[in-house]
Image 1 (cartoon, one colour):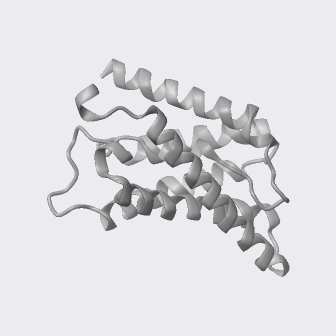
Image 2 (cartoon, rainbow, N blue to C red):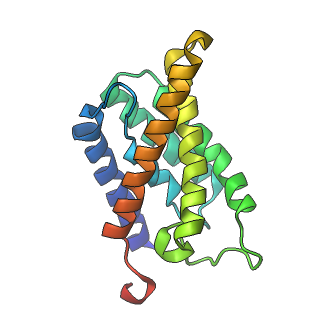
Amino acid sequence: MLIDIFKILLRFIVLVLVQVTLLNNIQLSGLVNPYLYVMFILVLPFNMPKMVVMVFAMITGVVVGVFTNTAGLHAAACITLAFVRPGVLKLLSPREGYEAETSPTIRDMGFRWFIIYSAILVFIHHLVLFFLEVFRFNEVAVTFTRVIFSSFFTLLLIVISQYLFSKTRAER
């Protein structure tokens, strides 16, 4: 249990540091803003209580928001992601349910399941984040384009990092 808490804390620190030091400086044509830090919330274990996930989401959003001077935008988007996550997990649940020992990762759930799960949640996160950032409807087309491109790029980074840093069940 203590090792799991340490892994979660280490994942949080690494993802937030990568986000604030590297990825916040990447903006391609003003349309692509990668937000890899959402992976922290995506891969929290299935058996983690919903309120704990919400607290982690709030902390993650506030920390990223402090470094980006966005006054709660990232916190709102992260809390929305954490709030919607159980519904998406239920929607994508296998007939047998989820094993208590697993997490929503490519290695545990497979590529197809993980892509669908991540794409839905990353899209929702980015939709909330970018529309709160703009906060007007006369730029819907541009904002929606940003959501699509940023979601795709973020999803690509998440999949690459899943393959680079996730261990298979046999390696654990």
